[in-house]
Length: 319
Image (cartoon, helix red, strand yellow):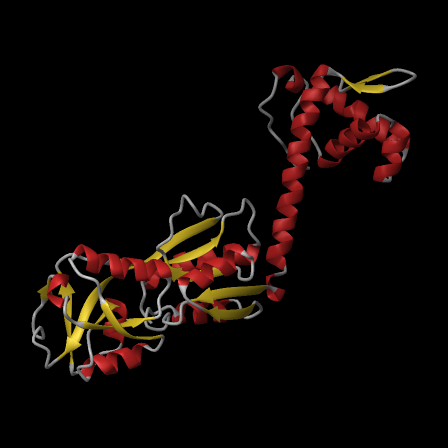
């Protein structure tokens, strides 16, 4: 027996508050069909059993749920209030069963995760590997792209979750929930032979005449970079773009130009002939988990969200 406590009019509860689920289903069926015979047929019980259970429930509650006449069956005022809450309860129970079934089926789950190409430099490959080892029955599919592509795939339901650079206006993307994971900042890297080499911190404006090597970033990241340069009084002269961070670092080390990269990336790819300069005015970057904002997300998506947040708390962004 399952016991429910209701916050409804006291007259409904005067006779007792121990109700069984099948009794709740019976009264909803009677209210639906306005007929004991049709309701009994619907829920596959004898009409006499149904009538007995309804009468027993009314005795327990101390009120009549239905007014019975030779022509019709109608809920009483107390019964209408009772039925309203009973339907909510049964709806929540159905949802609870569905969610538990989803959890029981996680061994056959499927999850599509969109990622930035540089998650390895951010230490997040270990996150995905840890999740796969913890839940070997969940089939993972990974798709990489820049943050703009990941956001579009997420909105089009092509992927279930994304690890992206969070530059999006949350007021304009209310269908997406963002969970910040890693807070980082950009630094300027130059060759060891560069005149600025050896400085610990500079104003970005000191690089106004430099040639910039840049990653093929999302529009949001590109806007942050360009706006930071404009705030420093210049338009950046971008002479080369690549998705390959090692190529960019190699060209900077050879003196071809300078680059703005995140500290996580730079420290992951140390080179003896590079100099790392912090900026006087910090340019921040946040890597986030993004998932659709739904009242009841698929269990496997919630599982990955909870695992990710717990993993970040325990491991930070260590790779």
